[in-house]
Length: 207
Image 1 (spheres, helix red, strand yellow):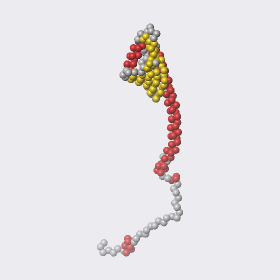
Image 2: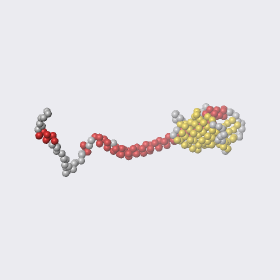
Image 3: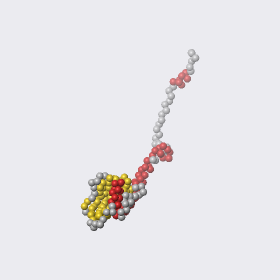
Image 4: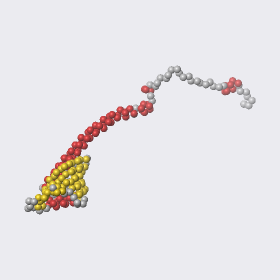
């Protein structure tokens, strides 16, 4: 190759500048893309926002409906609980006055804690022992009268405000001693639907 002459035409082609392409803007504006031609990604990114906006009134209506349904249900539950507690207190009063010692403990929960007057806190076994001893004493007679003032039911818990009137007398004596026992009982609904006293406070007051 040394000393060989290269044709001038080939040299010229290699050094000749290439033409520059120029793009002239069209005087007519481009037509907007049809919505049908939008990409699937764009459509999917926009569509989820629409149901959320439209769902707000539906969710609000659903919440109002649930609230309207639950309020009467709660009221009915509270009324049923109050009626059950009233019946159980009446049954306990009847059992005590009839000296039915085997029925006077059923209204109390086994985890009962109570305080009566100046006596320190006591439990289920204490109250049952005291009640059975009192009813088994044939030389002494006691009669309770219930004055039920208020029953407030909060779900599975109920607060009862009441006053017991106790008339006591000795066998063979016409003398009767009367005392008042204002108190507050706390009931709890059990798994079987019954209500039992789990706490109570009471004290003795002269008539």
